[in-house]
Amino acid sequence: MLKSRKILKKLLAEQGKRKHSIILGPRQVGKTCVLKILYQEICEKQGHKGIFIDVDVFSQYESVATYETALNTFRLHGYQDKSSEKFFVFLDEFQRYADLSLVLKNIYDHHENIKVYATGSSSLTIKDRIQESLAGRKILHYLYPLDFEEYLSFLEDEKALKLWSNVSLLKGQDLEKPIKPLLLRLFEFLQFGGYPEVVIQSNEEEKKEVLRSIFDLFVKKDLVEYLQVKKLRELKEVITYLAINNGQKIKYENIASLTGFSIKTVKNYLELLSEVFLIQVVRPFFTNKNKELVKIPKVYFLDPGVTNFFTNNFNDPRYRQEGGQLFETFIMAELLKGGFSREEIKFWQDKARHEVDFVIDKTSSQTAIEAKFKTKLKASDLRALKAFKNNYPESRLFLINLGTQERNEINYILPFNIGHYLNQN
Image (cartoon, rainbow, N blue to C red; front, side, top):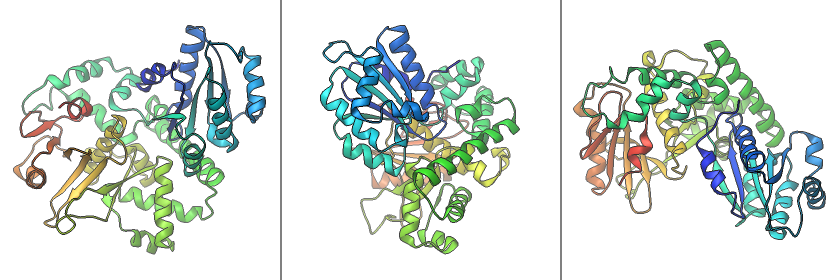
């Protein structure tokens, strides 16, 4: 049975819009499932005419390989050129062939009665193609691994879901006992992450095997076939280095020394790994070059389970030195899944070495976020946020932790429904 995702509501609301709806994201996060549910809802339930095309099947690709053949394929499935009725096209993995971007461009330019939903595993090549061919013709969506609510839903953990739905009502300290079921699920998430196929496996060895199969395919398809990476061994060394140093500030020259790459090549490969949604490069927020860090970025993986896969360490995060970094990875990913753009998520450090984990940098406002993987907080946990407030008096401050929830000048919040708080004025 296909499981629903939050993104479906937005996508269904766009079925009357002319622009192509394009869903990008890493492999195996459920893009095909989302597309199939859209097809079922729009064509099978609502009764609209349409076609589902899996470009990974070569014969199906051939049926839409050119503008002319695509139109004839659509006509065979009920499309009428002059009809006022919408015809829906569901195109899976369209990044495999460069010519499909031009086909989509011609469809948009000449057929107002065709609505396209398409998915792609994002890469530098697909990014370039859709920017050139589909400028002004697309609505971009990003599908990531499961957020925490979706995670509980996929596990069918009704008790935890009920707690999750009410967790924003909690106030005070020492909350770890009433939220224990949620904390246990969080610790599991920090071990194996939120890839749907991983989540639904019943034991740890099966989860590890699914992660292995996902990233064997990632290397074969994304790195070798699409991006034509030549120095695969060296790039794997880069990935392992980044996983070991997940959540840390990264110096390009250190990676260059490790691999023998030039600094320019290192930067290119980090951009590549970001574009295929393996990592997030978090850059410093600053307004004063003399008092704040301006250059050195931090790098996070987009999923804690993936981090653990590349370091080959799936031990309980509560008893690991890098548990705090895995928690930060979770927080950063929840921000992305909650709708903040990759460019908006930054971090802050001043010359006095006060460091704030994340800053949401909007044009007119900043939100500073500290992540503390602990139930008991100390005064020293507030220093960086207070230093940020001194520099940016209008900013909002959040301290995400495991045991306290209080609203004040510094907002203490639990990590389970971050968007609920950040999206409030």
